[in-house]
Structure formats: C-alpha cells, structure tokens
Length: 95
Image (cartoon, rainbow, N blue to C red):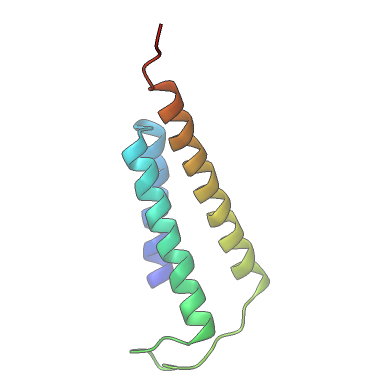
C-alpha cells in the first residue's frame, strides 16, 4: 500500500512539475525522492523497525528495486541541475 501511495504522489508531482516548473517544486521533489531512497536503504539494511509482519528482518534487494532507486537518484540530480540553472539565469548582471 505504501508504494502505491508513493507512486500516486509521484504521478501528481510530475503533473504539477509540468504545469508549474518552479524552484520550490524542484526542491520538494528532491526532498521527497531523498526520503524514499533513505527509507528504502533503512528497510533493506535494518528491516522495518516498528511495524509489519516481518519487523526487524532485512529484505533482499531486487533488480527492479535497484533500478527504481537509480531512476529516483537521476531525478534528484536533474532537479538539482534545474535549481542551479534557474539561479544562474536569475542572477542580476553588473554592467
């Protein structure tokens, strides 16, 4: 259920990003995707610590899991590049 909610949130985020491509939205995407990656690392190395039928058990990393995290990492890098490019274009020039 968690991953369905995350997928829906990312779908809504992509629509918002296409409609309103602004730096605050870029930063929101970076923070959200970093949170997903960190949660993935925690659940794969320490297990889900507080709840679930397999609390505390480490899960195996699958190929699709790894690929999805690499895509999220690529999205983070792209969003940070957009933030940086936006800062460069909005810097007042001295004449």
